[in-house]
Image (cartoon, rainbow, N blue to C red; front, side, top):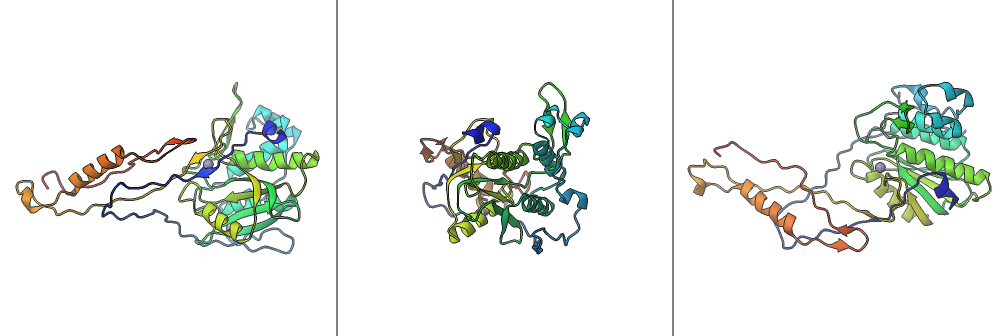
Amino acid sequence: MVLLNLIAIYSMLCIVTKIAIAQPVPYEFNLNINNNFNLNFELQPDGLIDHPENPKDPSHGEPSHGGDDDDYDDPTLPRAYKKNPKLFNLHKEMIHIESISGQEYEMSYYLINYLRKEGLNIELIPTPDGRNNIYAWYGDSKSTKVLLTTHFDTVPPFFEYRAARDEEDRIYGRGANDDKGSIAAQLIAAEELLKAGEIGKNDVSFLFVVSEEVGGIGMRSADAYLKEHGVNWTTVIYGEPTENKLAVGHKGIYYFDLGVTGIASHSGYPELGIDANAALVDIMYDLNHYKWPSDKLLGETTINIGLFEGDYGVQV
Ligand SMILES: [Zn+2]
């Protein structure tokens, strides 16, 4: 498939592995989703987005649509730049924009303007906390054969773009790979395939979401919204780092907090207390040794106790 020759796109079919607890346990599960943002876009008649809030650097918000062979001698760009100036320029401009989860506004502004200028139709799909996912399509149908999708938030901290003209001609910067590399590759690949007549306008659409790195509220909102509006595809290709291998499945994830409340007492009078730490140690042992479900494609369930906190004092 030409698409795959042009770029590295990785497929992910998100299979959620359901976790079952062996026996009823009196624990409360709390999902940690703590994003409270309220940013909204207003679409202007010319299709470009007004920029009501003040981004850190407004020049970042405007796609240059650049890409010029003259830039080849610019030492801040990789040598590969010459092969596809538009691709590398788009990639560089996106990395310049800080878009840590929860702070995706400027990046979505940039993307929306880019897509509009490229002649795509767009629809913003809001999250409950007021951020916006972006759905875009070329033709007259939102449903297409292929959906190219990924996320435009990143983990912290922010790192500036830097091209090292070393042997491997690498590009550094937050999101260079995960996942602004995918966005640039998806957009330019589709555009080139369309120009070459390899695909038609109703063959491909794009979904770029917020908050993939924290909580996944972006994709969940988009999923519910697009289902509700009857939008569908034959194939979905999710851009995500998979070591340049085509992946056809991915484990889902389920986070939870588990708390035990005891009664503090001096270690000289253990009979007066209830040791919450001891209970947690037992529970963690059970969690680690429980036979969780496995999957033919994805293997065993991974269970990770990432943070453990509990104390009063060494004698208590
Ligand atoms: Zn990612």
